[in-house]
Length: 314
Image 1 (cartoon, rainbow, N blue to C red):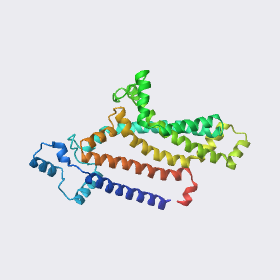
Image 2 (image 1 turned 90 degrees about the vertical axis):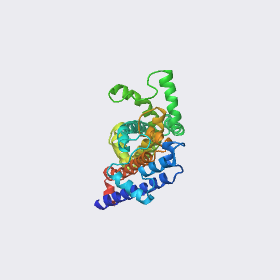
Image 3 (image 1 turned 180 degrees about the horizontal axis):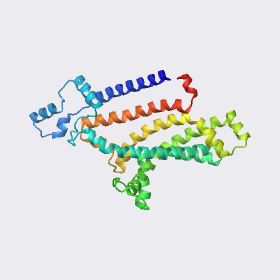
Image 4 (image 1 turned 120 degrees about the horizontal axis):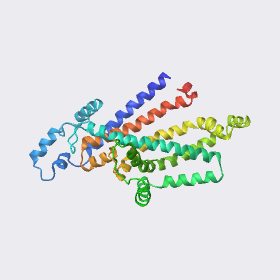
């Protein structure tokens, strides 16, 4: 078990290191001059040179990389070129919005997918099963940004039940929750479609096992067999997809936040790219990549918790 944890932790650290190299390299070989973007086309050469010196753009790439990594480990991602404040402050200010949206989307995804997937497996080759398969295929085919606009047109413009966008802040919890309903649904519907199909397939495989037939023969109710015996034994592939989907939900907030005008990291990265704000873009891309790697690392650890048989193989 200790060797398993060591291997997974070492792989986690090495993956993050490789990601940091790729992110830094890509960000620094892109065409364009950040100093020229900040000061404008009318800036003098002396002003441009002074700004490059101020932000360390004249230093060698290798030196800048090690300096960036060392500072990032202490929470210092530099100063934003466009906002003129520390990047860490921008992230701390907007991270709760993105995490709140991603967590709400994940909860919505898991609940809806488990109900649909287990229901479809319980009604295999019946109308309920075909209905779930059709709806899940439709959900996979619909782009999230297009679904977002449809939801706004229906529930905000036509019915006027929910706000079309914006975020009033957590000072008014009821208004804040109402503002997150449409983004959460738009973010979670596509992912729940994928997870529902995985849940159905995994549940069907478990339902063919001998212990499920034994549970039915002992007189247990259908609901107890499904939720107490089938679902726990079908969790390994489900958890794998959930871990990948949480990473997809976090990165998916980039589009959703811009559609609904939410003050999160997704909107910040769009603004930073438009302004060629190199420190902010580097920090945000690295943060999103770290979230993806961390989600996969946690899933690896959860395998042993879900299925004790894996401890012997670890």
